Length: 465
Image (cartoon, rainbow, N blue to C red):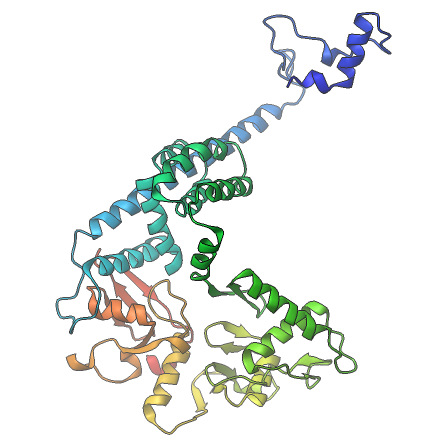
């Protein structure tokens, strides 16, 4: 539709021109341009005069932004091609360790997938999950969405746009992927990522042969919980669950938060919901608030904690003579008040006390006299998480591995042990990946490409030297 059709000024001009009683002469901006003239002339009306000397540089900077964005998109296309080439080549190679004991249940292809992910973690400095997603995204883009790849290579769309095409296109039947791409790609070149995602979801639903019930059953199979570190001693826990389950959880938290509490409790509803959420997960019930050492009502930090977490507390902090932070396994620094409260009210936490000057271990809370259990706890404190590159699996849920195998002459000591999640434990044992403990607590990984990477301990222990 012509813009003039909705322009009141243009209507007034038309009325005046044919004697219809226009209220004023036509403003200059609604006079139709003469044939052959630019309807939108440059702001620089006189080539000899520049009304704003900075205008040219302003325009040039905007052009540079656009060019840079196109270059980034082109680079993302090149990265996807390289990652998929790496995947294809890896499937033609053998990465299984020749001395790997027994049948570990991994095919050559699975070994290749694990190695490629580790190589990408090292090169790109991304997490395990990010690297795994990049392999999958690159494979789908290179093999299922050729026109999307071309648009990305030309800079017509960004990688976030391409990711929407990949995520939503992967859930339509194989025979409908081409139609999905051809229908949606023109939109991808014109709209923002959120708008593209809405359009993609609508198109995906249209192309789905299965019923919404069947798709929901499949979606429920992908339910998950995830964790992310936050700032200022906080962290994030999230969950993807069936909608009715989430609504029921929301309602129960709201009901608990609305219940009467002790006098002086000034927590907001949001804080009460968060506290109820915590109490239900840790103890199966809701605990009372406490005012000890907090200056006001506060959830009882120690109540209900199970013996699965280590906290490192400087002695002077425990005695209240220092505000040096404690260290929570799998997370990092925590404020001194929380560290003191855990040490005092949560006996199921294992406390590691360290010297205020040398940081040497002074005392270790023991729940068993067995030496292997003590050593295991020390290794967990040192490592914090799985020691494979890019892995953030907490040491609490990791396995203890002899870097040099016991059968190969390795000994059970701090300098020959490391926490590895079950997956990376198998990678280290059954593939040609090599790892080596260094005297300072670092661990060196050597991958089949020949590249080496270091992972660093969460806590430096003098005994590791």
